[in-house]
Length: 542
Image (cartoon, rainbow, N blue to C red; front, side, top):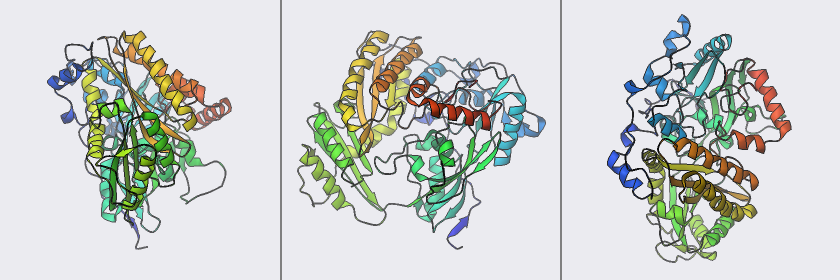
């Protein structure tokens, strides 16, 4: 078929990645800027933690060696081992800065095709080697770190060498894509065909399709198709028990979905190697506006009306007063709503005007002056200011970590009726936990990353000074308090960051026990040797 194309070219080369912190090492904050940031946090450390050199690290000795037939796929190089030890949570960054790499994998594998994955798993199962599937290491929940167990060795399996778009079905608007495709490389391969996956998480440049699928990642878009689940047509997964390949269909009522078993399985049931993904035509019509509110509860009511309107804005980010001030978007105790709409086929100014009118009806003031419904879109720099701050924030978090400033983020979702109490409880209970752990008051901010007709997805940021050498223990105490608060108010333990190891206690409380029994049975059936990402979703031996 002329509209179905098999592709053989590869993606662009992967970008350089920091071994200890977020993203591009060239974007890391210099020492002077780290100190300037810390000066804004009363009680912060006065000196900057240096970044250790790879040569200075004391890595544990390598305990296993791959057979000769696999040696070309495997590395024991200290830089590879260090770079695959942790994800990018605050506790990961701090331990790396302190030179604590006790959890380093023995080896790192770089498969180039599915056969390599099969062979590596066969060897690992026979040799009692734990396997940690690894996309680009952007997990912030301990999803790629080996923490417990008695395996004879640990292998980090880096899928980033499998990054091609293999086939495009233009008629059905879908593509078969290897799981190691990084966001920019994936989109670059789709762009000549006028198509896009339209999934842009904050980690877009430093995460892979397989990682998105394994963690049920949420993208940038705030309504409608918010999660990677919505874009998934079929999966191909290598398990120690065999290869699972689902049938690509627009929909099916044939029993429980096989794809749903592996979406969110976080590498503990199998290694995702390919997926058929639903695509969209690239948007050509875009418009944005910002609306300011004097009262946060009023702004929440406005967002609820928008979420229930059926207008489906692409962007609907509500920043509470603290988040608006931290992002440099607004001050004076005001909240800011950032709206955006887009379409590949139709002008969008009218739809944006309807959204702005809804916000105005609930007490909002469009930036740039009042605009009547039907007028051309209200535009200003707030949306771009927020976007720049959003992309820069992980680097700022790393800079604060170098000053021993505790920085915790947690995201959740709840129904609209529960949000006001949850918002107050987080400030009260997590604030109390910060005081107990650090002796200082916390800065606690909130924004909505995604909104649904029945509830929002709030994203909280907690910042407080820490004591050098005790940062991880403090962070753990604050994280535990946050998880308790979410559970007490019937909010999910995670909306889009996955469970990993850090969210395990909350996830164990949230999931029904019969479902847990079924998951454990699936684990034993698909991974009888218990080698795949032990400790994620289940106990290491469970």
